[in-house]
Length: 260
Image 1 (cartoon, rainbow, N blue to C red):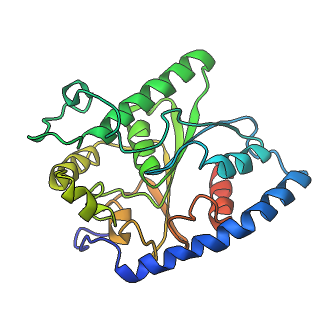
Image 2: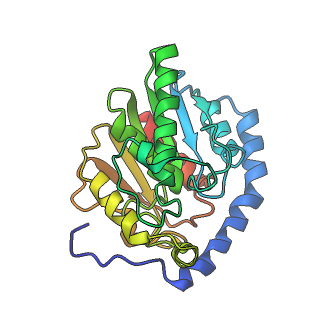
Image 3: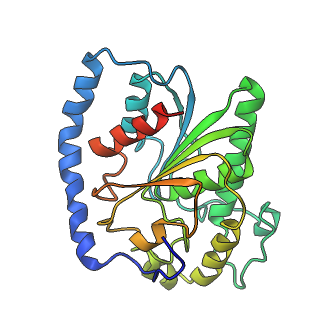
């Protein structure tokens, strides 16, 4: 992608395509049952994968993806922070966040995601101190955004980060949630500016971003960082809501991790 791209939220017609998630959900029990019966290749070799949920989701939501990875020999872990509400549900001091922010006035929780990033950095650091083992991060939507920032801050611990339908530019500004958050009083321009500053910091680990041109939640144009030569971008025509359970997505994640 180049710098001339026009950033915008997904078109309303893409929202209708999110109903494709119903097919993923209906086929999921059968696919999980088949996995349970099969003897599968040990691709993971015990490697550690932390799986981060998207906005409004929790570790329970990520169970199918974790089960899938565990069947192929990975050790998986949740993020342990409850439902992902972009940090707006957790009391925090924006001045204490490591990003050295100047919070907007009035403050409505705009730095909540940065707060969650710091929390995950601490979680991964503690894990590394206990095990001396590197980790892989897989994040769905906002979870992927957080995963990339953790990888940015822990280049010697995170070996690979995979994002699924994550907004990599603008924060929530170019998503279907933008109008709702604006009505709540959040300064989305401030968030976009802070995301832009973070994107100037190098991401040195292996990086994969799975994006969908028909995503009904995250704007396709905001799914790519301009001039990003570190990240391998893979397009799959799947729904945003089904990204973490769709069979094509799961197969792609496995293929990317096999290459490590």
